Length: 428
Image (tube, rainbow, N blue to C red; front, top):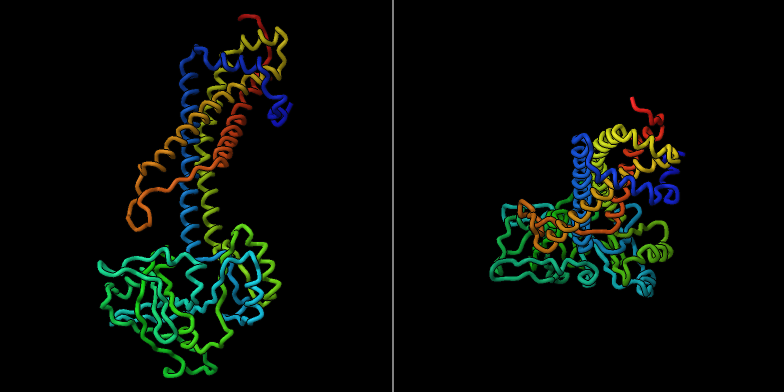
């Protein structure tokens, strides 16, 4: 009978072998060390189970928070150029986008690097020229800050002749904006399209003035990089054609249908256009988060491996102590498989007690953190000041299966030794 055969629920533990295992677990041992090592094993499993669930829950919390922040800036779908910086969008293509019932809204946008200057202070900014639909396709308008004690931010991108700028808080700090209604207009420099290699400062660089209407704070990746203004102003400054854009951002009625709508958009625009969902726009971010999660899971599982070594020692010592009992059971008709099941059951009891208590403890700590924010986040630079936690049943199942697998492997070694030993009732 192999180890994997024993894992079959129909073959594994019948009631009688489990009762023997329970009795051996509760009975007082002749050697105190066996009890001590057994409880050390249980304590290690409790610690390992609790740590695994809590760390995975914190990862869930941060993952949900980061995704919500990125969702405030990145839309459900994005259409851009497969090659180059701009795309041509015909009226017919726009009409076909509007006809798709799955699409809630979409925004035409132009993006280019610009130099923003406030007196002697200056900073490079990724300038997003957007249309009026942008406030409905993204969540930027919900993350505006106060300009000063007197003035509040407003979502106002102005128009072609009087553009206004909504700036990330990181860029605002870099150019030393103090805020307030008495701000002087900022100077903004944009590179224009040129067909010559030699740069003409008068023809190839656009210089304008622009007022600040708002400051947003979402996440450092956006706060330190982007500014949002009127698309017609940016297109005029860059000398772009009427049907020339950087990309189209789309919000959906049902974000879970993104892949279905993506296929429809590919039919409309063809192979020269790149259609990306939210995951593909941030593929490196999600890949790193997923990798970190599994690395931490593997490292913390080593705690359970340490507990497994303690179990092997405790069960091996128990096998040596119960040699006469094993011989009696064999004389009464107990098979080697039955003996093996008893000691596997002993390991299963340790796993159930340790894993069960660990899960309950992790659930209680997570509940307390969710409701009372017991453990703070240091630094004060994040949007929240406590560790976010989110419990998932999948994590409990994963950790439970891990505990069960490791403890059964650890129990297999002494259980096999017990079943393989020679039986004898003769005393020395």
